[in-house]
Length: 113
Length: 114
Image (cartoon, rainbow over all chains, first blue to last red; front, side, top):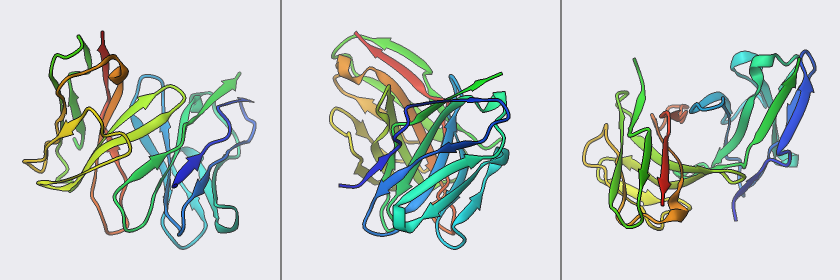
């Protein structure tokens, strides 16, 4: 069955520290890959997406993600976290040729001042 | 302003009382979708629509109905709500193709069924 795994439910980092949020997917072929952010009480906002080409993609708010086919991973990174990055982050996939989306269970990020 | 709107934003109802949550987008998107968000489960897709009069089931369609009679609207219908449908619901839309597929999400509808 197709699935998306975000193994870290909660992550706490200090402001200014680097961040990596993990995402692994299970699909037969390369899917379309997305990272969304949800601030408290808000809807979801797209951070970045990957369809093909360069495996390192840049997004908004200084985030980037790297697609690694061999590891079926699409990890999100930021070199220096700001207090405003505290939110919940969701990885999502859509198998090419389909219309269904599968979301991970989310990682809640806490930023210490 | 490009947006996805949902109404109502908050709803408390009783078991078995039919309800409809509306969703509307002003971006002329072909694709629309409904999700429910539950703690520890992330977002799960309920139904989606590829265009007018074309809908299909997501992963958790039981207890829900949808219709797509107009391109801009995609209402979610709970014919006989039950307490296990208490959740936060999101509608989303996207232009489907041309390297896009970015979904724009509405603000959410918090539903409580007692």
